[in-house]
Length: 100
Image 1: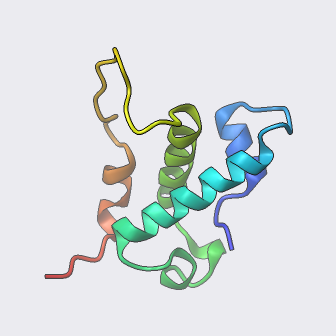
Image 2: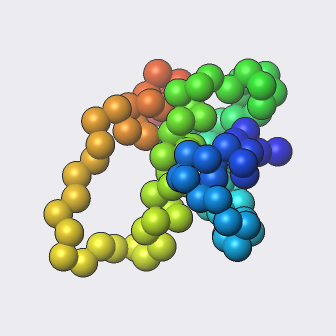
């Protein structure tokens, strides 16, 4: 069960065509799995259903989805990159389960 719909992700990325729908859905799935790994729990169960997932966590999924869609390789060449303030890690930090 996705917490971010295909339509929401496409609107976030300003994609209007249906050509990449399957690809984008795969990126959503990968982003949600990555967020679950960061947090240490399943999104829907950790927030009492998809409707209970906070907006900042959904924003982290959207940011990752867009990143995965725009950057389809493991590295960037010729680009100096830095993490965006209030990016994925900052959005997820309040919800992360720390286990030692």
